[in-house]
Image 1 (cartoon, rainbow, N blue to C red):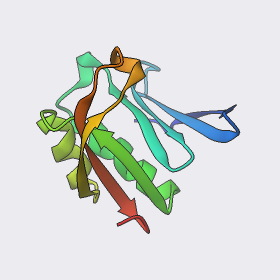
Image 2 (cartoon, rainbow, N blue to C red):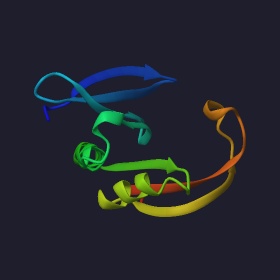
Image 3 (cartoon, rainbow, N blue to C red):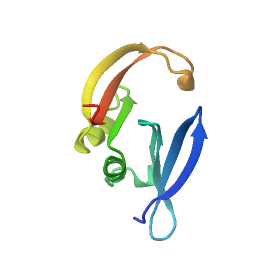
Image 4 (tube, rainbow, N blue to C red):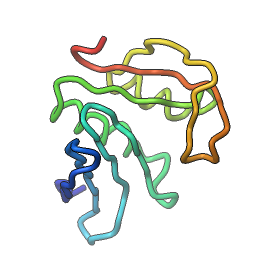
Length: 118
């Protein structure tokens, strides 16, 4: 896996950084995005799931940032395993979290923290 390609933009006055991971042939493996101290997007290519890439990306994130937070659905056990494997700690269950991105339906989420947020 190559060093990530980094894209930086500003969203609502906060620095948004995206890290794109490619293999040695230039094929896309996955990405994560950080807005402020919130990891707001993690994606692993379907073709490369099950290869430990999410854990590697989270290790990259924790090396770059002193503190991080993220939200995860309680039923997303694979993601929870990856995050905990990278050192994130479950902080709390937030009930009826409103998420416009997924249709605006209130749902429960788990809040995970890393670093000074723990």
